[in-house]
Image 1 (cartoon, rainbow, N blue to C red):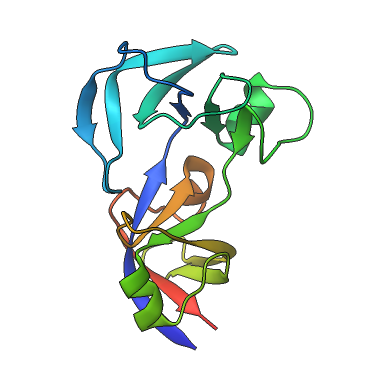
Image 2: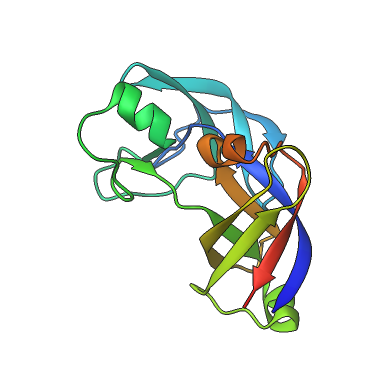
Length: 162
């Protein structure tokens, strides 16, 4: 078993538009290369969403709305979906090819994370590894997952490779 300290980022509800027709202006860069949040917000299904660029083309042209399980139960119907226009994103770890090679990781591999500090220590398994040339090593959790372990955006946690 190997452990590596990594930074955790907490992802609140947001929208990846299918295209950028010039209506979104960059507010700030995000940690992942080439990604930014816009000044503008959009509304859908009674929720207000931050907009994350660049666009992610989708067949239906609606883009993707990422929500937490809590959002799903409060605003949407049925069981949470993990694909489609509205979806709950599964926790994941972004890294570049160099980090993946050094740590012995492969795309799609499942790893674990552990919060050992504070009043709510705990562990999450089934963290999917995503490898991209533009990626910076970061774990992404939604607000429900982060709140369960009292993780704040930018906290350092353990990535466990078994």
